[in-house]
Image (cartoon, rainbow, N blue to C red):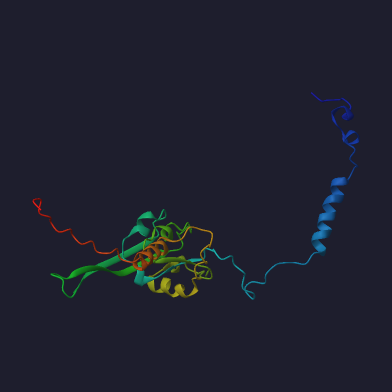
Length: 203
């Protein structure tokens, strides 16, 4: 059923006090302002982009820090980390028997599956994985996005230094432990208490 009532009864343009075509004028004003403003487009790849400090470009590997604990591979939701290792004996002077340590043979990350969640970096207990802002690693073949430990190790040179500690924040556990040890070493030792000589009850 068609409503034949007066538009002014339902809050028409005359009742709202708006002028016909006001929306069009506003839109043209925004367009004119945009046309006269200076463009901020960066001319990539001729000009390198200014990335924020916590950019997630690629995952870098510090091979000497990896203990093959497999936490990163187990916690990865995409199962894109592949690790292989072997054990070797290390002779320790003075020990009764040689110790064993894990030697990293293979550490691959398939960046065609990675969703850059950063869980592997967060769960690593030995700081073997880092975020690098490097992002120019596109390939023509998807198979080439599987990067081995040598390739991941090359990106360690692009990892930015960690941010400075907030002076108003809570100190690190290592700093607290070091300050506690220094305070204990600077404290003078208590004087030695001599044991009292046994007295003869008959005297």
